[in-house]
Length: 74
Image (tube, rainbow, N blue to C red):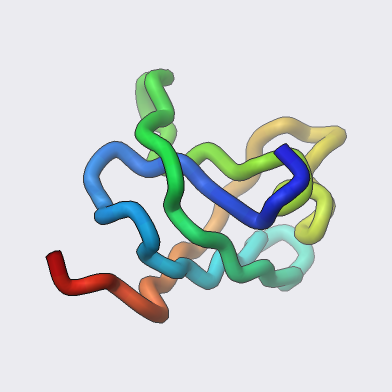
């Protein structure tokens, strides 16, 4: 909850993503450490800390751009 992490349905654990909130151009770098989201039409779940970094706690959801900056070789 307080680490800069995210859940993604298929990216390998340890993948680092740069997340851009398109509404305010704020970015955060997160590490994939969980599976999800399990809600239709959502691609990524951010931890509370990561959501706070890009000012999306109040809204709960946001349009984002996610860029892979590191993907572990498995």
